[in-house]
Image (cartoon, rainbow, N blue to C red; front, side, top):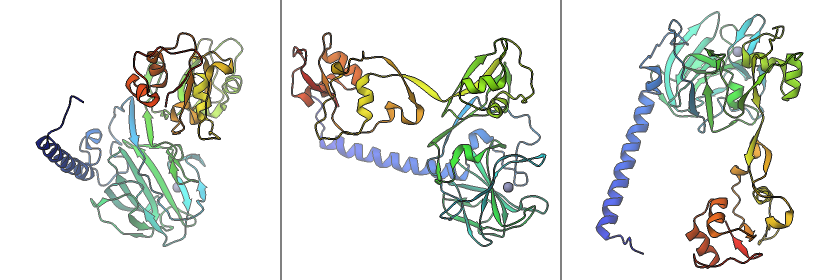
Length: 372
Ligand SMILES: [Zn+2]
């Protein structure tokens, strides 16, 4: 190997790593002192839940929110959702209600800093608002006791309060909100409360423009948004059935009501539940659990042509496969180390190493080459 490393090089590398760690720690500390300051523009309002309530705020078109460190705000084994996010009795319910007993511990959902510690007799009761470095803010309402002070830096999972029944509340529960730049987001779109985990490690806020106009409607990137052009005779019900969605979902995504009259050529957004990926038949086989140690998956025998378009539900896309099972490729006419390298995303050098062959080897049809 040409690139030999000298001992002094190693020492200076270690120093560089130590410096980098120190720098990263500083960064992390700063991100907790001034959480998501770059998007909140140093707006640290300690009175109002929506810090931009009087401002015509420009939402970013898309913003990635790292939810991987989420911790359930309550300790209950079984999560009881007593009220969902959404319109409720002619007023908007901007959070989700989680059943608890007065005095139960309430925990910070993410690392962050306490922005508001306050009381609202006709609303939240005793409540806290935390701002997080990932850009989200979380609200905790109807509390009975605070365990933190204003501006306190908090780690995910740290106790911040005790649950209660204060404010506009009938029965003890935690009113929990997730907000982005003041705008309430449906917490259940971000968090799978029953399983106490985020749906995805990264939630993508998307500020969708409808017919060129900015809208406050948001969505996650978990499902790609696609557009349908209305044809003569089509109704929302028909379009909903066609794409396996509901009329209410279409209304929400398009900012229209169920009784809206559709015009021909109008764009209707819908969530594309399925993605189409370029996948070879062996990529699909790769997903199946291997029964024996040395599984051979000769693509040629399946009769499928490679590069065929296969519809795969997002949740199980072949790209997410993390299996360590070795994959073998049976050489077909036209295959080369170069084409295998591209197909399996592995370098030619690695292919040679794994198969103990030379780069200039002539591949024989039917020969088995380990490709992962
Ligand atoms: Zn509530």
